[in-house]
Image 1 (cartoon, one colour):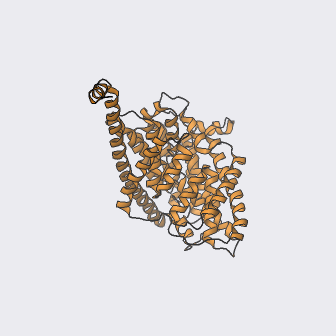
Image 2: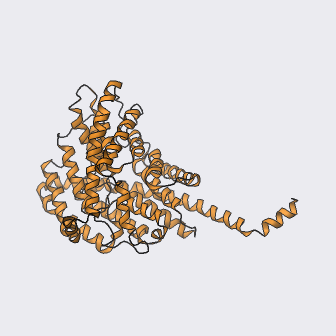
Image 3: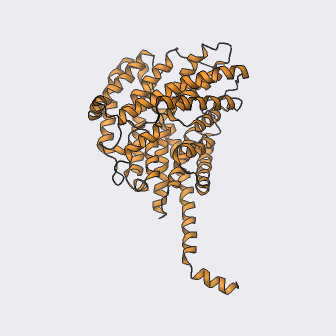
Length: 446
């Protein structure tokens, strides 16, 4: 084919130019979105830390007043959420999963910037009163919403890959774990991980990660942990951590799904009175916090970090108490994630496990406990292993972590067959062409 004929063919094929223009705009939208979500994730993390510090200072002076303050704020947050921003309830991960399955939801309030912004505000409000919530789920929702907004502004069609990339970058920015963001996209957000989606995900993760790195530095989320286990210890501890942790995590997931979806009259009655239920949940969180000296309030990040680094061990009942506080906070329906609180519960479980293996390094056993329980909750073994490897800078534990994760995933399936986030996302798919309402959104969002 001669040059003039090629030119004529190009000029008479406008789709080539249109496709190139759309591709260029898509890349620009993804890059801008990744930068913005990295900045927002850092601001949200800073605000969340300040909220926890403010509550710590408050309860140091008015310890028992939290028995009144926390339940009333729980009730107020849930009332406001269900009344004005129903799509902001729970974690945020089920919302993104639902929108990736039904792209019409990406154009609704489910992933709108006002909804996502109010989710961050309400999550900070929960941290201000000691709610056992995490920042990761809300970060995933705001990240996807930012990606959607950037693509709307540049008039680029929104695809499932856009939402997957936004969610993955959100996880990476929240934990400073780029690999975990990619793994989370593969395991949880994407049912089919195509090559073009892979490039989009990795690009968004890299950009948001560079923003986080530039502002916060190359920090390790839970601190550096160098301990490892002997092969003989691995063969004994990993099955125990995997089986017990998986069962405990699966029980948490089953509780969450029961409150959200069960047709049992008891759960239906609770769902019909969400504000009263939230008040009761807040009271449970407050009582547990008072009884444990405040160790179960908030994300649990500081306590978990000290346990992983071997600096501080709370009471033997910390894991159970944190389990109760996290479950009560999650089933209340208030905005907030469960990633960080679940890792904290797992650390408490690992501490209990360490009493049975006194000759092995306690931080290493705690890490296996975190893996077993966290995998039991979210049923994402690859994500769990990579998160814990990156947040502790410990590559020597990768094989024990994988073995524990595999066993925990199988054990959790025996207790709760439905994966938590997938089960909760169904509450947002009942009315695909309408924003979620009180009737369509599950009571708990994880």
